[in-house]
Length: 238
Image (cartoon, rainbow, N blue to C red; front, side, top):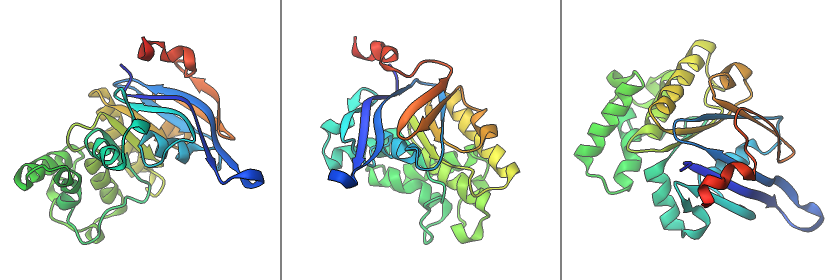
């Protein structure tokens, strides 16, 4: 089963003559272990696609399924719980809480999901070690470089059993060396079985992906690799 399935998804903003069609009938799937990059010009709908895939927004039409669960069928609390358990989100601006240490930032979603503090800290330390900064567990964000902060954000996205990793321009604020290291981490998590969907404007970073999807004016206009149209979703509706 595909980890992420989007079926004829549209998202409109506004009404009447002022309506903006951010996405128009987009169908997309991401399989376990697959790394998919999304590219396109500014305003093409890339970030909208990612927020819908992560359950941070709801579509005007169509369906978004994560591990077979229709996000539209869930209430606010249930959708938030699914995000914490199954979806890791890497933001371009890190979104770390400045008053929490690296370990505490990574622990937070697990504690919100009811995991005991001792176990949550152990998982956080494992995740920080996985991304190569285990020694920074007790440092605050302001005491770390941009690349180190992004690693903390990735550790937070990977902690627990996250089956879907979403990344929005994860290397945008980093130098070339740090950016390549972040891509290597995301690629490794995909190789370990997670499904990854990443928005990027850098072709050299998209080269790490198994498939690249191109958006323009809210529509998928091209894709390298496996098809993304409705015919590719048959296995999910059988």
